[in-house]
Image 1 (cartoon, rainbow, N blue to C red):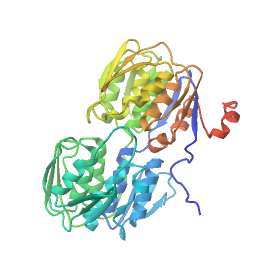
Image 2: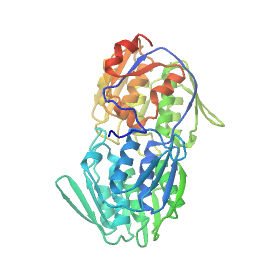
Image 3: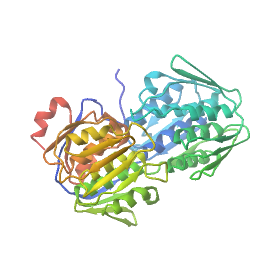
Image 4: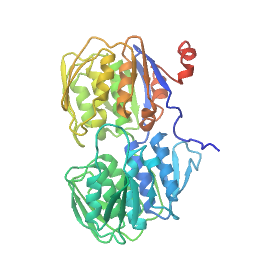
Length: 443
């Protein structure tokens, strides 16, 4: 019997078709954060009692991580109260400590089950992780942290085996403020004996949200949002109900969409403090972004100035917004320079934007973008999640028809991206390849 999919539309052959030139007018509600909900779902493994997670976005990655937990023995109810964005998880009877290649190859965040499995079962076996092809992203910092907690690590045949009858608190310094390593170590330390201190920790809001979830179960985590996190291990964690924070990258993507397409777009369910670097750069480019009681408003006439930006760990400019800004700067007045310091292979969308008429030159870890008067529609391919968003955003202002393929990447991280854009006036539709000729005539 074919498994029912709750969170993501199926079909890797789907395409998005956009006819540019329509300003965006109206309101968009931002969904729960992808990068917060995945570790929170995984952290439910730490408890033997029921956890209710709300504002869960409908994403392929959520579907995958739920599948991983189910394989480990978790009982998961999607939408148990009739809510479209609620997940109930009970991990009392874990019977497996192995996350297999079939799941982990699809999504890098699956490696986060290591920390909770070590805390609950004293053992974890994980296939080497996959995900978007945007860089090497080694997990050595995760393993270094585990070893400090007393874990023995062995690697063979593409798997990592981690074993520790008892986890003991330790002082851990991260050579780089890795988000995943910070989260994984934090979860393991929550049930360790004694106190763990993570120095040079990542400061992202999603880590704060994870700590809030752990603390709501009875954990003792303090200092998140700073470079030093302190975790006092407890004997057990209990039941909880938690609402996921809004997705700052989804919000940033729609801010850029509103800027490039022009019009008057209002975003509700946002935490403005999480968007400061994005808003600052939009304002520097001449885009009007105003803070209101219930969210953010972006007004634009589709004209803006070139600027320079460099991606950095939070609270710097997010690497997950680099591709979207490249689309914006492709039609800015003047020359822009984008420097990518987080991932070494995150310019694959540049070639696709050139197919649309962008003047882009890659120079090592930087890109020089010469603003042009217009982009033109073309057939382009999404190489990863944020690249897909960038190409759709470029299509909003391009002349003629833009067709974006390989959009299964978008399903990994955006909840109803096409539907939300269509609701505010974008001339956009999602089609299956075989339906293209029939449906385009109806746009």
